[in-house]
Length: 209
Image 1 (cartoon, helix red, strand yellow):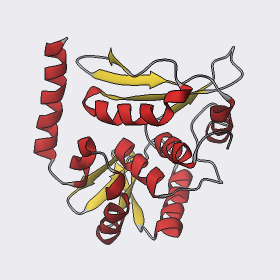
Image 2 (image 1 turned 45 degrees about the horizontal axis):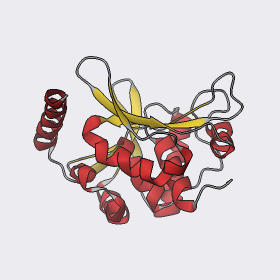
Image 3 (image 1 turned 180 degrees about the horizontal axis):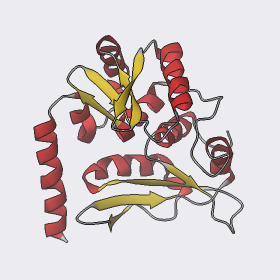
């Protein structure tokens, strides 16, 4: 699509399955891509920016959110390259899964880094924002493309994708080469250490401002 490289396409698709956002302002013809994560994932945001820097005017910047949350974000220019994906993922201005979606191992890894976690022997993908039919479709893609078996797990009143134990091992082996050092904790079931690291990261940033 357009002038995006295969790597940029994979990162964009993985991001759109996760926390990434495409927006088209009312007075603009083309859409822009926005990357927004917690400040503790600064390394991850910087990595995304380095892969798309030619489409941006400024680098990532911290931003105070609600309460004590510190975000780290950047936006790209409004360009035709992103408009093509906007049309596919936002046909009614609400994010949806396109019926011609294709994934590779890099897009799967980015999806996991954005919106995945590991609990005990299972991997969870936080797909609560998508409809049940869209989640079933994503399950089919995971099975057909990677041989990954999954089910839908109830999360309060919503559902998310749960990768079974055997397929979680397969998925970890597939995505591990692409997982950034700052997010490798997601591959290990260590919730206490992870929570403590996150609190320390946010506290240190606030104190340094």
